[in-house]
Length: 297
Image 1 (spheres, one colour):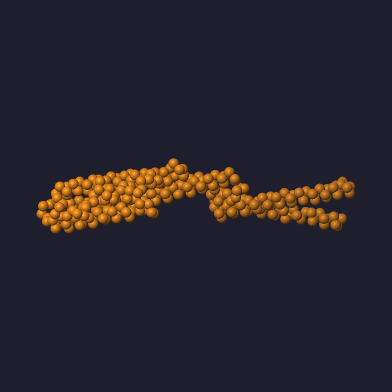
Image 2 (image 1 turned 180 degrees about the vertical axis):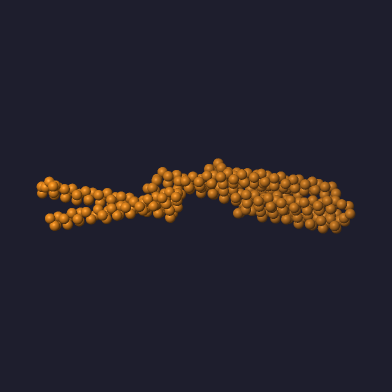
């Protein structure tokens, strides 16, 4: 038979049971809160796609992620700058090709005028066409501008294309832009208004053709220079694209949610949450049972 216990021992055991149940409820509430917080955090990570949902999650990694984001933004702006630079050079090249076409047409007219089968009146008509072509060239020089920057009138010789986040990261393409005004090409290729078909001698035509040839050489050299800068900018685009890819990968490793890992954590949090809630429900009944027993004693 069990040994009888004293009244004092009985109450001591009852109080011990009561305190034990109370402590257990405190622990279980803590576990329930922890598993609930973990569940909520994981749900936020899955829904937002961000591993770091707040600065308290991981201040160091969040700072690194912010640094990568800033670098990605600066790199994207550099890529935009390079694209604008290439577009500007494309415009300059297209305009210079128009000038080259007019110079070629003028050269053909000169060859025609040098032929002895044409009269002074015929040469007047040729001179009129040449002057129109020269006007076309001046119009191209005066109207070729990119966002207000005039490219072929001699007013721009220093155009920096910012190709990186650092102030030193730039390519100056200004030297690729030449002055195509009639007064400048070939040392000056304007034809005075006093020149007529009857006064335009073979020697004059030969001299003028030499200037036209020099002008065409200038345009061809200018286009080649533009092409070299376009190649440099294309190479810079490749570098910036590679940098962007690396930056995004590194930021993703820090900030993007690992869906497989987060899904496993979510299931684990759900199980712990449900277990803690169930045990807490059972434990909360112990003090009531003890009090009921005391009431019946």
